Length: 536
Image 1 (cartoon, rainbow, N blue to C red):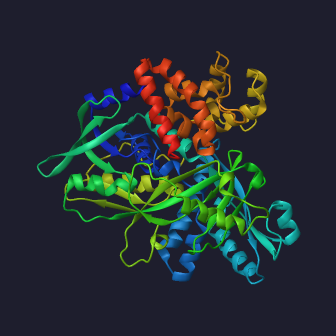
Image 2: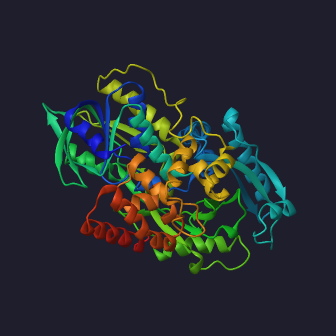
Image 3: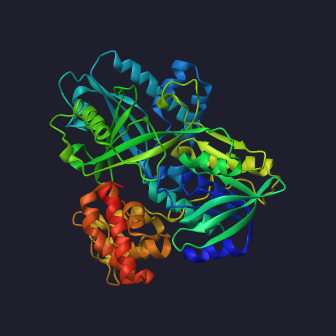
């Protein structure tokens, strides 16, 4: 699968729909539209999920905090958001079983009155799940809570409530959605920037594009345009109408990675209330512990950085719930993502803004979708395509297909295939387990590539193989070392030091694959190193 072939189609064909933005929402819209039979193109000016969509808390969930807000504020829209998200949680677990799975979560309780409060709330959460439930919530006495999570602070602990949600690999999920859209006939390319919109007789009919990697410009014509650019929503809207009022504000969400020994595998923790009234999490993820998140107003930038104040905020809350010291030196990686929130001037603080999505059409016909959350990306895409068909007078050959369309890697996924991978290809068991979960029914192809001289690990203690670098370049549209280290593999998110050590070999492999000359290779490596030094 070559990016130049995707761009070649864009240069020569006219499309029913052009989607701008390659995060979860944009790729979801492209997949939905293409699977209905529309002719679709999608462009992303960076890499797929380079921004918000790779920097989530990695939970597929209804949102227990949104439910609490719905109850306290009698807010029907929040109830609907939770209900839709719980339905979509079940859909993702079914359609991408290699990338998504159920996770057990506990909330430790240090006051007796908290037990009935949280127990009742989680039973309501179970009730909203209905047939989409992944497990019943319950109460754990102190001893059972400590058996589940021995590292909990014991002083004052009265017990815990337990419930279930879903967890996933967000960046790999995003790539899988993009690849599934291509499999359905869409033309999809990363590193293609929309520099302007084309209007004829007051209607948007296409966009001016620039190939960021090669510097070439071209135009794409389409009967409908969708703006799905997350925090950059208003940038595209201003291309359509320079005087348009902004509709999106950004909130920074910082996460940190700690060693996996801090909490047991398979069980995460929800911190019910932080200093500013949020919830926070400590979750097992890819063998490490993911903790976060913050929620502060932020300026939109391409590569937001996690500040020391935000990192300390997370560590400070963890120390209140865990025995032993947790210091800055324990942080293996930290990153910041920008959440696009629909602006509400009456709301006080970004944590009170709704995560529900909004779809609007400009007088020229530009469709904008923004807001929402990762879990509901498929429902957001369905709503967006429905509205685009209606408002732009487009017709599709079929109704929405994505509720039952497996994502790439999911159709033939077998949880037991890891043992066969280990035996059949001579892989160590941790590598076989990882490949099976990361690539699903494509894992044998990756394993076969590894046997062709690329079976070495990229970093000690991690299951990532040299073969994956080539697979990412050949089959997953990766273009740069950071595409590989951060989003096709997750090493840069898990351990910055390990990613820096692996960088030269990744660059060597990509250089041969893409026929970079020495100068190009040096530039790519330097740029990647700068990104890693800046904590992504």
